[in-house]
Length: 392
Image (cartoon, rainbow, N blue to C red; front, side, top):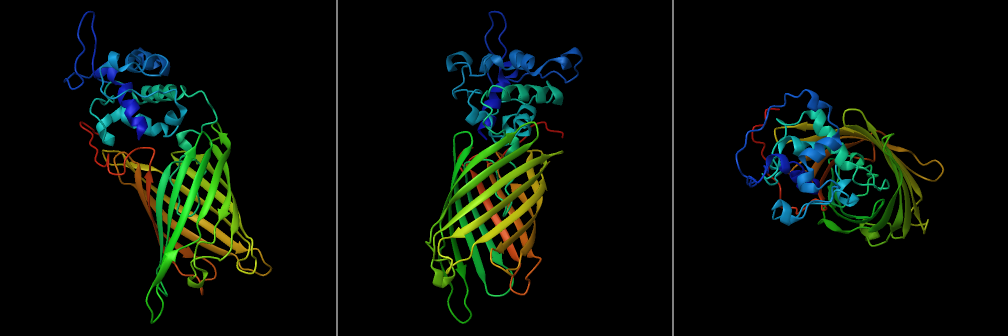
């Protein structure tokens, strides 16, 4: 994550090099003794005091970053006052790099581990102070960027590419997929383009497949409650009749969709996501108006010495055509997401959608997706990490 590049410089003024009176700086790869984390009155330092004494040599007191000619790094230092950069990730992601160093997320060893110099409380304080350099409160904090569920969409605006698949486990073979492109636009907006495609096996015949109905959907954050831990967004867009209706790959009519999306943060890195929406076709003879809703309850658990995460979740979803006598279709979907890269910008999820109603006509499905956070970096970089000296 790009925040890791910035945090790699947060620490370097204290450990990567030390300038004495009239002395030369130690090179970044110099072996130096790190003091033990046995603090007394130092524990009372505020985040600002820690930043000014430990980090400002590289990042300057205002957080905008010292010039390259001053710090001697080939890579330019980031600007903590840039909200688009500072608000992307969670506090725990920032703290992980301060604690275990750049290599833990596949980044440069210029960033040393601070676990022996700063206590966990001091790390949390300096991270919290760094986050205050973004003065624009319209930008939702990274804590709201909770793991993506299989069905319920995130309220947080993001830059992502997601490939999803749903495979029928019983009856005629069928695979439905979505290639989703999400582009963040400023503090609170996002544009999503969803390109579905699928393949179906026909008894005694060859498989058929093709493109489905493409949707173009803007999203906007309406509520960004930092103190309450609540985020609420709305999305609305158009679904184009690009699929072949004769092959059951599309509805054959233009439709509009409206959705309300939200998340509530819970203790211990847990969260509740929710969604409700309607789909309104323009030609009622080809497709019915419908409503959908759902919620996902999950938590995030770090494991292993390189701080990869896994996030178990369970979703409860429902849908109904808006016509008299139409049944409500309920489903439950246990699932989990796993971070694949050390940088945590590539993730995958596996789950099972289990129908609870209308089981005579609805089949269980195996669900899968792979997600790439395009803002964080290349798909092929930062996959391996290591944590020298880790004992946690």
